[in-house]
Length: 90
Image (cartoon, rainbow, N blue to C red; front, side):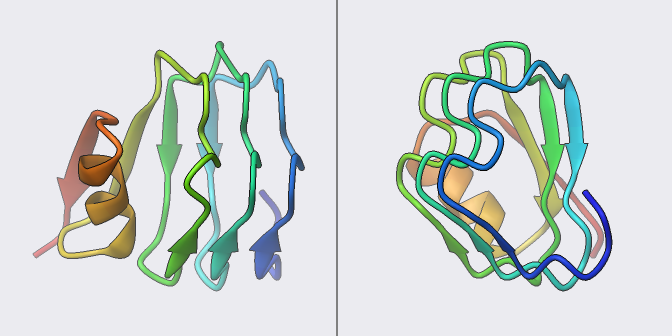
């Protein structure tokens, strides 16, 4: 995603065919259904600037792994929603 994006809006990338997504630092919010039904999505890197992710942002993304810094909101979100995750950093 391009730099300067602070919010990924509702259904912005729903049903995307993308396999990998890197959310740039500075983004704060991933909205409702942002990546819903993206069955090809394998991996998304979410920076620690993201502090809000809608409960259904990744609904029906069965192959998804979230990569994010340790102790970030994104890793807590992944754990709470049963999404596989990889942490990095200190």
